[in-house]
Length: 216
Ligand code: AP5
Ligand code: MG
Image (cartoon, rainbow, N blue to C red; front, top):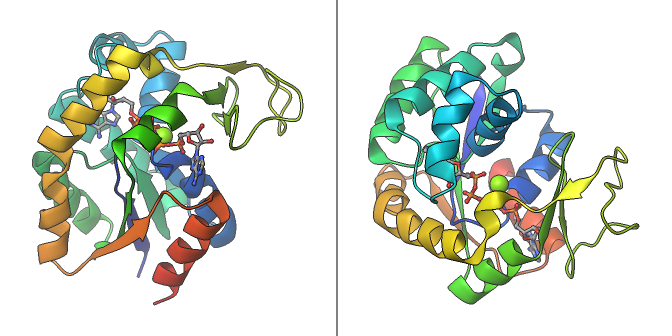
């Protein structure tokens, strides 16, 4: 049976940071809906243009195009043994669609680690985040600084600050999270899949807590 993990949590809590670490230790492919949209924006595709108009405002991209994009990604051979989903699902419609998508690959959602934190911490993390242009490696100017400012430790590419990490967009993303994504906490808790993790801890401690959940 393949293993599918859904990483749940507000913007800036550390989903991407943890997903990269779990992908390394489990070998599961890391599928980030945000990264897939940013890849499309970089390649100037039709989907990228559409997604950008929502992302710049801190709003969610419509469910139908998002679900189609994830379906295509999950159908690739590297997801045969499962996958680590970061940022999808983000609405109840997406969560219900995911059940159908995984059924096509004889899979179910096995784990939903829910990483929590307070709003001031989220804002501080997003405002100090620097992301690698080539592969999306994640740094923080205070908590996880690169060895050389502006340069990725892993591939030497340039670091940039995401457009949607501007203060006003961050506030909107957090509002959208509480209105549209937070209902998934109850959705997955009712299905016995949710495990809560304190995301205010240092990266290594959050990772240790996550791995212990995945071993259960
Ligand atoms: P997406 O890219 O998914 O953004 P997000 O959910 O807002 O989350 P972030 O990537 O901002 O934060 P993160 O939790 O990954 O934190 P990170 O590890 O980087 O989505 C962007 C947009 O795309 C959405 O707004 C929407 O428009 C669209 N979209 C995406 N998916 C969609 C969907 N399914 N449906 C519709 N629309 C969708 O960490 C943040 C910072 O904190 C970093 O600097 C990091 O170094 C630092 N840090 C991490 N952990 C710690 C720690 N423990 N201690 C100290 N610092 C830490
Ligand atoms: Mg992320």
